[in-house]
Amino acid sequence: MPDYRHELLFGTFLTPVADQAERVVALARLTEQVGLDLVTVQDHPYQARFLDTWTLLSVIAAGTSTLRVSPNVANLPLRPPAVLARSVATLDILSGGRVELGLGAGAFWDGIAALGGPRLTAAQGVDALEEGIEVIRAMWKAGGKAVRVDGDHHRVRGAHPGPAPVHDVGIWLGAYKRRMLDMTGRLADGWLPSHAYAGLDALPAMNAIIDEAALGAGRSPADIRRLYNIGGTFTGSGRAFLQGPAGVWAEQLAELTLDQGMSAYILASDDPDDIRRFAAEVVPAVRELVDAERAGSPAATGAGRSTGVSAAIARSVSPDVPAHPAPAAVAAPGGGVPPALGVTPTPDDGTRLSDVQVWDETTRPTGPAPDPARTYTPGEQAAGRHLVDVHDHLRQELAEIRRLVEEVTSGAMDPGIARSHINTMTMRQNNWTVGAYCESYCRVVTTHHTIEDQSLFPRLRRADPGLVPVVDRLEQEHHVIHEVLEDVDRALVAFVSEPDGHKALRGAMDLLSDTLLSHLSYEERELVEPLARLGLH
Image (cartoon, rainbow, N blue to C red):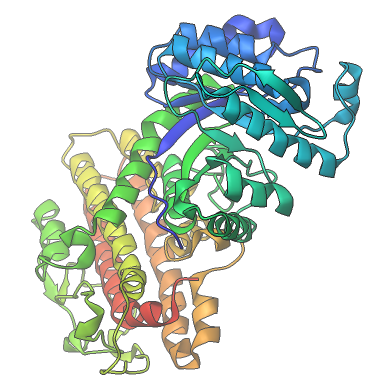
């Protein structure tokens, strides 16, 4: 896949309701105040309930100082391209270079015709859009030759070009079908679909069409920004795309960025609380996850990691519980990770904090031994490293949970506040139910386009029968970990009503640390090399 490393952008997609005009403008200002990059507005001139998009964008631009503005997307059949080009350039000049042009071929042809626009077929609309792009780009070349475009739908005969925008305005096409996707690859600066019409499972094929068309036109596919109109809820279970806590959103959008090169996420919401939460909780986490993955930091690659780090963290927050050594078999080699892979699984140093043992680690199966003579491409190495990166995130959150629990048991934090905080973490779904946590756990080891309907393990079973015993054992351990998580939740509730509740809570956390950290190390030991060899997709 091309290296689509555009700057990440985040914004809002507002409904231009005329009888709530002041509220719409206030939401745009809120978009800037909370630190988002972009505000967009749909463009349906035949909708009598809506404000005119360009007038509204002009008011928004005048009332903000950093916010980019764009139609999402401009209705070209009702906005003659030569005039639209001058509208865009004028607002770009007046706003100091803050305008982008989302552009569409048109839809709802009855409404377009009712306003005096042309009634085109879908194919004619695509042809007209291509002619319109030619006109727009020519009109932005101020001081150039007179513009002459003699198309079937748009004709410009000797117009003087200008004014020119003060920055390179991006033309972002709302495209879904092959001809439009092909045009995006050949002519556009960006692709602007909506999740409702271009679901996760459809993105890879759509991206491939854009990439192929770009290469055929002598362009780099990486030059084309991939944007995505999204919507969701922060109150869901996390089982579906963007239906759960903010941490789940962050994981899913980061996966989408890393796997499909999407680089701008535009939240379709008129709820100020959703906008604030998106900006405060989702956006920073997405940036952090993507930056960490791309940076290839020592923590992500395993370099510089010493044995016993996770156990040392656990002991530091529960000093009154002695550590117990694990069975010696824990450190026995499994499928193995050859040095040529350049990835170091996180070792299990054998430290255990709890006397309880929920499984027999000596019975863990191992996978096929890797070929010691095999070499690995950088892409394969990155695929193998991905699992370690994901697990490092879970380890960090485990340490954060232990810190919160220690504050609760020492009286420094109210138990209700702790539960509220833990509920927002990505390894944890509402109520700590078994199904919700399993969904979260599986999600972080699954490619983004199979978030809803396929996990990593079934694919590995099909790809390499020798991995079936390992994958079966890993799934069995998932269920055990889910039960341990429920015990922690129950212990946290009991802490407020039982005199010695703090002991039970610490004990439950110690058992969670033992089981989860042991499981993560075992999974890395067995799957890092297969993931590199078989790929993530």
